[in-house]
Image (cartoon, rainbow, N blue to C red; front, side, top):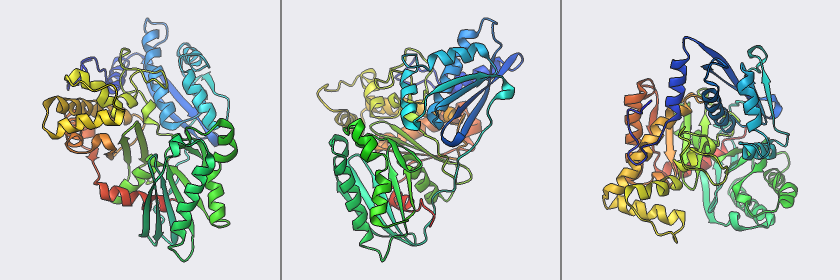
Length: 457
């Protein structure tokens, strides 16, 4: 299983998209069906059906390695705290063992328990007893009537807009330092002040929409890097309901919708393109994702693509936080650029911050340095194969890329190489999936208007 397009600086790269294709082909005549189902809040369920070799035919380890990667991917795409493995007790019991505290996927267990406030469980069952899909997809956003506040909480600045009947009548960006501040009152006052400022530019406030990095369930903050330094006690007491509490101060019974910033970016892209089926991916400090489905809905999925594996090579770089290998964060972020620099023959000063190291590579790129170009070509090849893998879970018509890694000529080279992979390895996707880099201005204004459009009045 050799990729048709080689990742120039990473000869051991083994795309999971090709592993999926090979498994399907190898088991076409004599395989067994497997269903992976993940349940989350309110019983919402996402399922994925595939095929593996029959149990006890000498392929048990290969089967487990494959299903373990697919389970991991589905878990971080959709989110949830109950995994069902239907169709194989042999594989199911090994997955059950992996998803225990202290087990192979202990990080995932503890993270999901925190998000969904439920004990994490794995169930093994027959195909007949597999849970069915239960969607939480909702036609959120694109509501432009009335007087609305759109708030976008970034890690380095916060943006707010006053939007009247779809037109931004006032916008401001304020530098703040949420990630280094342990006092939740700092965050509360910053958010409240921004919203009061926007409200002062309109005759009334009919609705509030919030775009914010992190994981949100029923408009509550479950996990968010903005509150990195806030203690667990203060987080539970003062942070979880912060956006709801701020909305009440602006006015009683004002509808509010809080969405992950990746989803809002995808929504802004969908509004800009006037189409649906949009997967938005931001390559910055980490890899962030968002999705608007082919019906124009936000799915309620996690879309935490940083933790979704894309490389099946067990010698691939390990993410320090999750302890797992081959995951998107080490491919589609500034970490991905830094990882490849030594293979390109570029020495980076260890005393520089990751953002500064990225700037060095981008500076070389501007000078036409072939070594820097090879880094972006390699990331582009990674990305082409990753798009095909993401298509296992998402119905994609458009892919939007953004974030500091994609700025300048590097982003163009990245997309050209991704397109090359689709053309030569996955012609079925090359015909139906369009790749885009939105311009900076439409992205900035579009994001706040899209955020404002989230709630229905």
